[in-house]
Amino acid sequence: MESALISGLQGLLLGVTHLGVGHVIMILIASLLLYLGISKGYEPLLLVPIGFGAILVNIPLAEMMGDDGFLRYFYNAGVRTEVFPLLIFLGIGAMTDFQPLLENPKIILLGAAGQFGIFLTLLLALALGFDKLDAVAVAIIGACDGPTAIYVSSKFAPHLLAAVSVAAYSYMSLVPLIQPPIMRFLTTEKERKIAMGVVREPVSKTTKILFPIVVTIFASILAPKGAPLIGTVMLGNLMKESGVVDRLKRAAENEIANIVTLLLGLCIGATMEADQFLQAQTLLVLGLGFIAISLDTVVGVLFGKLMCLLTAGKINPLIGAAGISAFPMAARVVQVEGQKYNKKNYLLMPAMSANAGGQIGSVIAAAVMLSVLQGMGIVGG
View 1 (tube, rainbow, N blue to C red):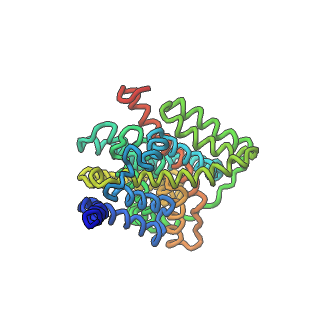
View 2 (cartoon, one colour):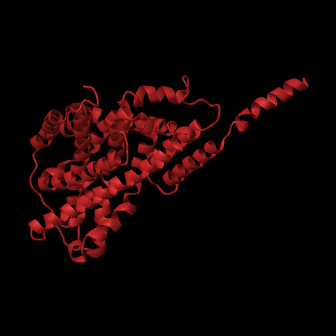
């Protein structure tokens, strides 16, 4: 009886004896993500399940990502197949209003400029010795679009999925801290005070219906490897604008998006195992991701300054910062920053136009990179 009790106690303490320093560090990191999501409100819909998933996967002997682990099941079913990020894109499309962009289409150029940081960081990653596929996965953090980063990294660099995903969503949540200093450094007080009138070009229902169809066709022909990305975003938007499938639209932006967000967050957290995450390469990925988003902001604001010059001061360069894909957070940052210098300034609508352009631009940038890799024979058709 005594020996059985001792054996039972030994079994009870087995998990404690296998608890390593790495596990403790990762549980602390996961707790930090939970703190940021719960107390600070930084992307809680993703940071909370990511943080909790990271705790679960770092419990010794729990085997959450083992062959029969329940997190392994969801990972194989939704992340390895790329289904989860694509379903998230469907919901994003159903929730995105492209009308501000259609009312002021020239602002889409800022959405294109806001993606240059991706390609500049790609060159930097290659110069630092990253493999081509790894470099693409790291550079796409600059899209400031979590689902895009997850899709690309899970497809071509799954060993970097945890670092890339955590970087993408962490920096998305920190946009209000990252962008303003760059915006102020690159613009003059006179430029920041520029008031932009609201452009109200009539946009017909037909135009709003044709927009997702036309964008899908042309973008997919330009970059076929990105057809799943652009196709799901635009299908969601078509369901929204058509007005004839309201039940499907509501499901895409609510039930489907909520369930997939939960499972995707858990799966991302499940990739944060101590022995894989606590590496020097993870810090390098986080650093390059910060550079990518910063460069996106820099190029977007500089292009905004160019548009300001060409329009004789009618464009406030601050809206160039909204050319990244952190929708609609980046547009709100522009509005807040603009009103600090001109209380009557209302930059939200033009910034939303640039932000919507960035939403499309980030997906097309990823699609172009994937198609270039295919053309080079690095990935299969």
